[in-house]
Length: 356
Image (cartoon, rainbow, N blue to C red; front, side, top):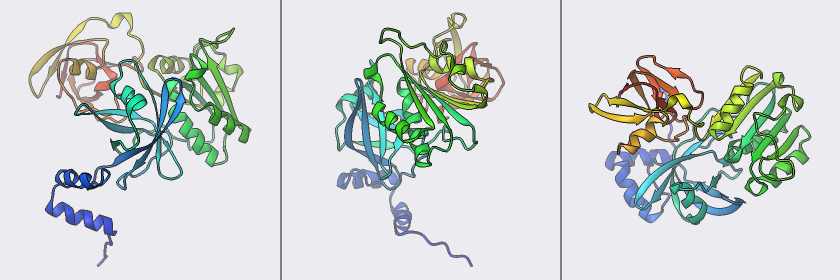
């Protein structure tokens, strides 16, 4: 008979579950130590570092339930503000000592980003879901073209650190856009990596500063910088930036991969309202065609399950029983019955029935 051995923490956790619920255990244990839980990953803020004019890097120390992550992945961070837990997604840089570095840019009107960037102090504890996401160091041998705008530099910085730890096995060109120089993050680190690794080239592009502002992604002659047909491209930034990169490069490069943290501007033909029926409750609501289903439902006072709000973690996915939705990042329309729809990056194009 095969024997299964358990570590002491695992055995203790199994015994604890037999006599007390995880919620009750966590309630009392966190009063002794804020990071003591039965199952829930938590992280304590241990250090704040300025990253740019309007961004800060937070160094987090997770508890033992955190399973780690790969460079380029995301985590959902739960932040307590005024008695409510609000969840936002960030792309951390895993550090050598097991800690995480999360860079947060203060967004106008952003409750969580404003708290983290201006108010959170060492000692504050956050809920921390396990890592998710597929943007990582490519296994294929193609050289890389990294395109970043604004906060989109954060997952690409993590990828560059991982590649540097491998000795920079492929040639990498990083093009990093910002409006002004004081909005750039990690400049000294990126330049130091480029100085250490000749196969890495870093180009900073400022669109609202200098005598000749840099061209945007749709205008820069990329084919004069690299051989696009041989490049694996990873793009990360606002929705409009990613949409421009996708439109210009998909099909012209060896592989194209992208993540957007906002949606592109609304097309003129996607205005007006539609009726959305929630099949489980029978409720009918009027939602704007140019807004994500998640935002529209929240505006109606509903709280669908969600996580990253970026279309990555799939926490908000539900079945579309009928009707047509538009993917906010690609512009593609879908009307296949019973298909899964991610509420955070899907907008209603026609009347809908959702399995909610």
